[in-house]
Image (cartoon, rainbow, N blue to C red):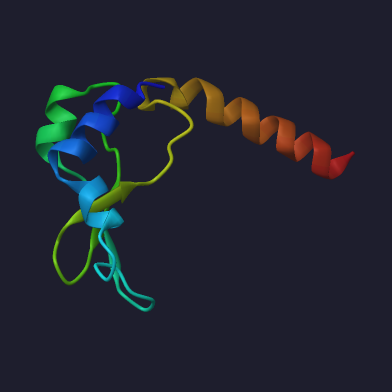
Length: 90
């Protein structure tokens, strides 16, 4: 997976400084999820990457882990489901 683009996105949006500043995120705060159309337009392999946003400030604070690039999902997921089904029934 290409994490360079994601890392750059988080740096550009000041995520690391925000997270390292005490008091910015507190227990009970809301974290929302978003897809950035501009990021998707420039990163075909990482299209539909889901970013985490601090609810009260709209500050980008992270990204959900994505193990399979979007272009490979159609071939990998059915195989994985088949293997899981076989393990359950054996």
